[in-house]
Image (cartoon, rainbow, N blue to C red; front, side, top):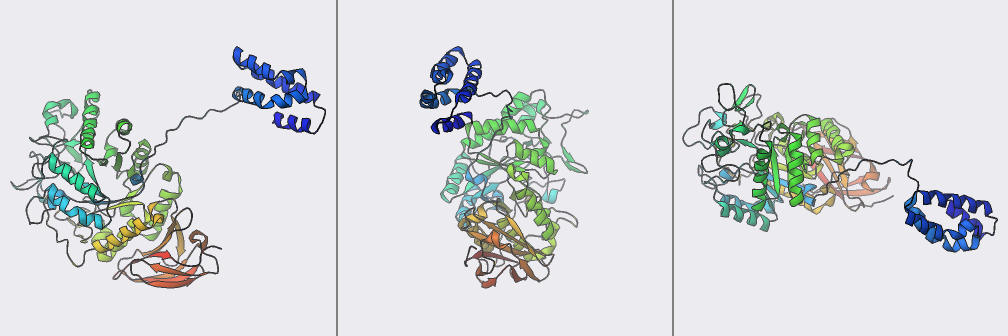
Length: 552
């Protein structure tokens, strides 16, 4: 700067007469940009400079500099638009979800489960390492248009209907299905979850059964057909006569939005801090931007998971609007190259700046062909992939750990005997359950900070199209996890992995030990190229920790 140069010349005893004239011009220009009072203070402090006195100016220079600083010439400056930054609690980044239907949580076949039955399962789920238990809608279910088993158009007198057909004579979105329990039972469930290190997440499904109180009280919130009937939900050729979608184009937008926010406020008051939002892409962006901002203004700890199985740009826009986490396309990325390409997009492009993926190998709506045909090995591989590729993942159980794989019909992704339409009785103690594997994976996730972030995911080359190799590490490199998965559920696959040793913090010529934390085997590897062989009939993956010579 001019000041630094002038002071250096003064200190060296050089002639600075011209320099002081330049400085005086700078002071006068700054004074011209200042208020009268500020200009007077500046000229007073700079009097030695204006008088051409080098020694006196050197003494006054710090004061002059302080007065000049806020008066800098910004006529050529560029002003960038302000950007909002959303900062959320740790569970937005790292979470482990388990979805279950409360009505199927009972221990007696055919009996409707209760919140108390769910509470009885929480110690087990906590011990398995799940920290979020997500419940489908817990509200009264409508009678009109109720669906029977496997989405049959006619329901029998004892068929429970779909929990997503919300609302009946007992109430709507703030009411509880009477067979699950009452408000005190729900509060007891939330408290028991908290005691086991778990949060209860509720489904936020903004739709109504024909029997929902809103249909009669606020007919303007629903679209009416020319014959006067309310338009039921459709996804042609599918028809959902048991569900009325809400009309967000209503002229009573203020009343509707306030009521929908009231649902969130009610359950926050009951201790809920996580909501899984059903089909947010079918509601206006402006509504979500408003609801999320209004909710966080009063309750910054509330998290929202977007169940947006929709076009990529729409999914991404919802994330930009403020959803904490997003469902994604993981369920349909089965080949090794697909997984590498997709997770590179999620973690190494600008998408990572605004979207946090929460990956699910299955949901009550999604039983992929890969799981239908892949057997237990496919379920095990998908569990490893979900738990180690992403910092947040979830499973719909007990269907997942019991490897439920029968579709409603050929070509369908719907479960046969879907829990969406009937109460199921599960043998959770089956010897072939994957629950122990889920427990080991979740323990690794909790014990290894490297698995609690997506930022450091890196893929390594490997011979063989069906093998996928990747690693994660902490920023300081103290914790490194290396994973190799056989994505072919039917055949043994072998190949050589070509490791990026710098990513692992291993010296090029070092010999190092890898410890497989799933099977407890240990291998001595040397250099970047090492052989692996994985049999899906046993364990289709290695999850290695490195316990070797590290650093170059």
